[in-house]
Length: 107
Length: 118
Image 1 (tube, one colour):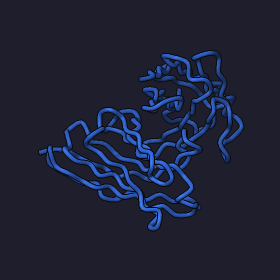
Image 2: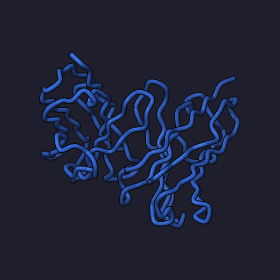
Image 3: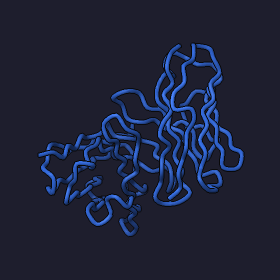
Image 4: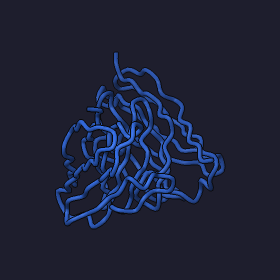
């Protein structure tokens, strides 16, 4: 199975900050990667797919990039509604696997 | 508007069975792969199973293979998960999700909680 390792596991930031979350795949997955946002008690929401494609309706302050087996989610200017937990997911091969999550907290 | 509504969760004893349902609306259900994703209390997300549009292909995570069966009824716009031989570690919120292409989960239901305990 492909392991997805996210870092950091938690991060504190302020409104207006730029935040970067990284996900590393244990083997090559091409661009088969998605990012999700989850708020407490709610279902996850798809933000980015195919490593860098913005899902319809998602604000442009969210972006994704890749370099080899390393993938990055960037939030350019944090808004109050962005404080949540973020997960990456590989879709290169079954079983699809998620990272362990990164909790973004208010500083 | 795309809507996915799960039902069928509850408390079940170890070794028992449960059948989850997901009612889909607002999109051509028969045109999409569908999936079940679960989340244990306080834990991360775990993909559980996928099913192709016509039901001809099904994939499972190893931990549920042989115990869970994903199925669908396109005439009823419904997705199902039959769960047998349930274990404590199957305790989770189970989400029904629509699959974008064959790979990503673009719409999710609100989830249904399954608790396996004596």
